[in-house]
Length: 258
Picture (cartoon, helix red, strand yellow):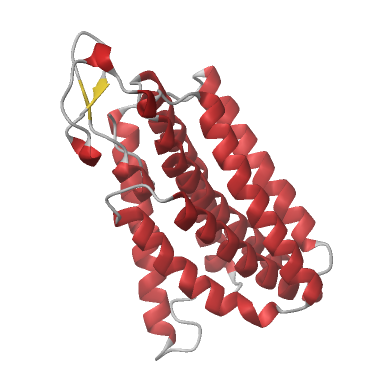
């Protein structure tokens, strides 16, 4: 299966096969080797409904904890929630088995983080959160339409380009963060100036195109008959990208407000 820019999808079973058909490697995840015609009941093939349902559950939980954090005014919980959520995301990504409770815990923590951050931004720039949410939904829907209509086809070349861009922007974020410890404003990538606006636009573009690889990875997993429980990984990956996209749009809007 073609690799995705989203690290969460590294845990999907390896797809093998020929003649245009793919099957998942049964030796992974502790599954014993067996003929494809003898699939156990607990390995029901994944469907699009599984992906939609799991993603909706995660986003619903994120929205609830986010709203509660915002309404309660406990915005100071944003930082600890972000740190714990980051550690939890690493555990989920590199864990060798699927754990829905961990995935749901991540969604809840991200909700607390986004609720606190959104409260702070909205207090300074009234109405900015609604604009960011609308922008995030619009970008997601737009990329889904682009993928489904085949307007942009996911090719190996495009995949390498997006992954390379993702690595590049993350590296620049880290360098800017380190530089900010010694130079006020760091490299100027987050100070609200012209360079910061350009960098945020690039991040939004990379996040948007990452959805194409995520959709493609999910589509291939469904066609390959991957077990239904792996839909949690896909839902987790999509949520990670959505959270990043929302934060970048929120930050960009704040630059224009200033």
